[in-house]
Image (cartoon, rainbow, N blue to C red; front, side, top):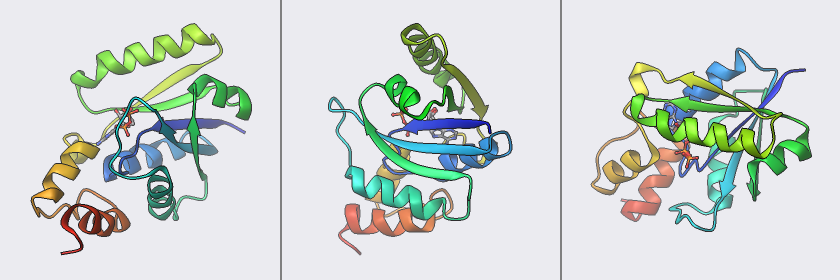
Amino acid sequence: MKAAIYAGSFDPITNGHLDIIERSAKVFDKIYVLAMINNEKKYTFTIEERVELIKKATKHCPKVEVDSYQGLLVDYCKMKNVYTLVRGLRALTDFDYEFQMATINRKIDDNVESVLFVASNKYSYVSSSVVKELASYGSNVSDIVPKAVDEALKKKLRGGK
Ligand code: ADP
C-alpha cells in the first residue's frame, strides 16, 4: 500500500488544500492529512478546530486519515513508517520554500521523499491567509473554502454575522 503524509498548518483548510488532497488520492492509497502544531506560529484556529474542519472537508475521501502532530515531521514519518511527503505548489513563489523544506527533511532522514503537486489554476491564488483576510471584511469566500470552513470563518472573524 502506497501511503503519503500531507502536513501543513491548515489554518484553515481551503479548497486549494482539498484540490491537492484529491490529486494525491489518485496516486496514493492512503493520505495522512496532518495539522502541525508549531509553537513559533500563531494560529487563528485551535488545533482541535483545524482537525475538525479537515475531517468535515474530507468526509468524502475514504483514503484520508486526519491527525495532528507537534514535533519534527520526520519523527511522525518514522512513527507511521511512511516516508513520502505531499506538498502543493501554487506558483514559482512557493518553490524556494518548498525546495528548502524538502531538502531539510531529506537532510534529517535520507528516506524522506517529497512529492509536489501543482495547484489547480482555480485555486492558485488561494491561501489560508487570503481567505481569512477576505472573510474578516465580510467578503464571500464560499467558492474557495469548504462549507464547514465558511461557517467557521463567519463565527470566528465576524462574530457569527
Ligand atoms: P504551511 O504552514 O506548512 O505552509 P499551509 O497550510 O499554508 O501550511 O500549506 C500546506 C501546503 O499546501 C503547502 O505545500 C502549500 O504550498 C500548499 N497549499 C496551500 N494552499 C494551496 C493552494 N491553494 N493550492 C495548492 N496548494 C496549496
